[in-house]
Image 1 (cartoon, rainbow, N blue to C red):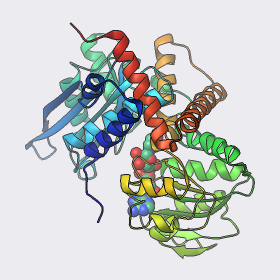
Image 2 (image 1 turned 90 degrees about the vertical axis):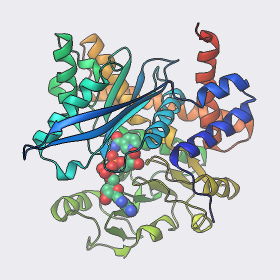
Image 3 (image 1 turned 120 degrees about the horizontal axis):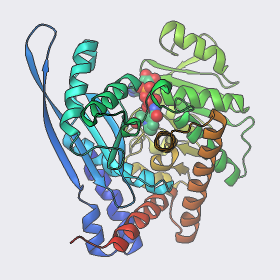
Length: 416
Ligand code: NAD
């Protein structure tokens, strides 16, 4: 039986392993195990029926030694402080591994937005923003959308923060609509980022993207974009799935028809040009590239020996458990770890913030060209560490990220 660790314990384990391999100074290592700040706020909200509800919200900044903190805000009934701490720490490594000048943060409110009206969500968002405004700001900590928050949530956050300042501050959040200083190319940023690193991995392993077989678990915002772009590049999408189930066709599924079907029926499950496949079966298909793009803990010690993909590109956060990871490495399956593979989203968020600070906006082509440069460099930097240190790609990504952050801390010294 695999040891059940919570997400923060898993995060610490990954950090500890990288620190050990790096022979990191014990003091620096200890500092990185603790978040810099953890703010817990109570959020009173007048509900539509006249009652008063009090929600709990969090904002955690893990590290700011390389620049302002950056990370999304999620609204979900299962939000816990430990989960937010883990996600904040992962953001520190994600920004460091692709070399963008941010530290890591994450926020969340324990609530069920599916049972709330738009007005209730707006009031919740505004009061939450007010409560965390003591620690956020364009030079301090820049939130973004995450689970069940979107560009409308970001618009309310930006407006609330700006009202208190007395002037408009677009750079306080990213993921805004274009009309409020959002960036072009944000919608598909994560998908493009995943595709850029898949291209690198394919080249590295001497494969060919044209005709390469691809299975994608999770046909959502990230997954659907990956399917579309890889399809346009001539790859063969053999299977996709969503929460209701999946579909398989060894000859290839048509991404355009699949997208139409999904928007018409709400699921890919009964798409007629393929056979049904369960989410578990999809993971075990023979393919060149497997893309988990749904939930955490999908590849476990229970199913890992049955995984036949050559490359796993982790679009989702934390899809592989630590126990499974060791076996993937032993079986020589090439894993592009989450902190590298899905860094396209935060990279384009960084571009949005830069554009806001300069009040100068880029074309979508400029955004994608800059994104490709960042992702290719991130991949090559990690590959270099992996070769030099003879470690798998995840260990290499953590070693690179931790060493970059530790170097910044060492140079700055410990205050006072
Ligand atoms: P989303 O909610 O748009 O899509 C998730 C998809 O997964 C949906 O199609 C859903 O039906 C499906 N799904 C849910 N349960 C499933 C199950 N048991 N088996 C198979 N599919 C299931 O979310 P998203 O934004 O695409 O995010 C997906 C993953 O990518 C998450 O782990 C997220 O943290 C990560 N991620 C997303 C972004 C981004 O910009 N969207 C950035 C970084 C990381």
